[in-house]
Length: 163
Image (cartoon, rainbow, N blue to C red):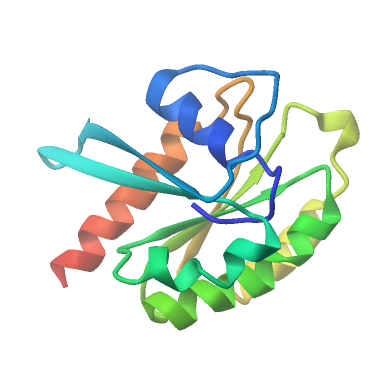
């Protein structure tokens, strides 16, 4: 899981793994990984890498993405600069994992609808350029679509590995 800092990557993972949300944000410094088994075509084990979004970690991204079977790219719906960074994140994922590696894009913090500044029109325009991606609006706070997008990337990875 990659994206700029403070977009909610850790919060989304913790919502998915433990069904919890912590209002007190603590930035991920470096990398953390968590594991979750889900029933999807039998038992499927997801190993989720939570990579810090600070600029210093972008240079080390290849260490953690090399060999990844898929990626989740996250931006903050209330901060347009994090949306604009998606192009760079997509390019880095493609450069490191290969063009065919499945990925999804998640716009987080959808619960803050009055603060959402990234317009649907901009998102749709960006998605037209992304051939193999799916988009979800989510909220780590409410849990909106969190389970759905993790299951979606798991399905994409299983199909990708079956080729």
